[in-house]
Length: 421
Ligand code: AMP
Ligand code: GLY
Image (cartoon, rainbow, N blue to C red):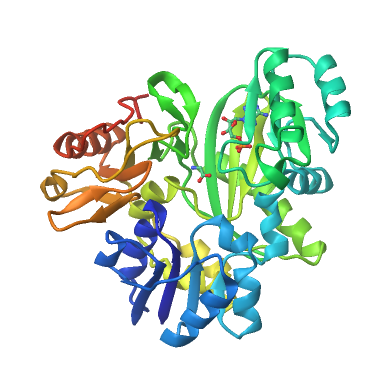
């Protein structure tokens, strides 16, 4: 099978690594890719968010399957365009991708399907939103409806903070159209969990759960980021919890979307809060998590490609593949090394040293790197996702931090408490 991956980050590096090991693979390309991903896949130039470019590239290489990494190409209708041209794609069509691209859509779907989530109210004008915020009990959470690069959510402990969030989204237009509608919801308390599952529009096959470390600094201090680290498995989150989330969250969501005539094919990611009353959905994403993928795929023993192909409708045995899915007993821990200043402004172009000195059992997934004449340099906010594998979480953690200790670039920042339970 010839496969084209869309995207260029650490998640896509992990996908390319995993797919490159597939017995069914005959050729692997990536659009636009990176010099890190080039280890496994040939890079193509072009904009992965342009449906025309993606169809043309897939045709040129004779791709049998296009695997979409990030959400933006999905929201731009890349899968619709590929399917219209007879090319199979892993990922939802634009109407189904709304489960991530509109939080209001996701909430309405959850109400319809009886999926547990925080009580909420929706607003499309600032005046009524502000009147509501003036009365709602603190703390409360204000969310912009659309895609806002992880910056559209404010957990407000003070009323002023909630008012500011409403004004920023609805009056100042900080998120553009994405902030034209907002949600105000109750603040949930508990530990977070990410559970990803693959669906063909009917069946749901769960992957192993993971925990993302979203805050910038140790102890969950500082601003939210795209993710500063990840661990899988997660203590206390075993098979029972996975089955419960499949039964109460993932399967009802997929069934409700099928009933609506907008079936969800691809990867459905539930961001959950494990509250005293049980798991509650914080958000849905319509693609692999980043950095969740960098810990979940290294633990997967089975061949991923047939599963992606079944989700995309190229075969009809997703349920059987799901039953046979095999996982390593090893734990995986990923530590993200970020540029100084991230998630605000940061400089790039600094030389990265020590990338070759990483011990066996460690993987370095490139998120924001490039090469110059001298070697690797930084080119993004999140630079590397360093994953360690080991027979226990502690050993995986030691392997990851040992590798992080060998890698250096000016301004490098990472959390030191990833997977420290
Ligand atoms: P979201 O993009 O909706 O997942 O929100 C980003 C982050 O905000 C989540 O990972 C949580 O840490 C936090 N968050 C979102 N919604 C809530 C909520 N209802 N209660 C508490 N924290 C929340
Ligand atoms: N790690 C969170 C996300 O992928 O959205």
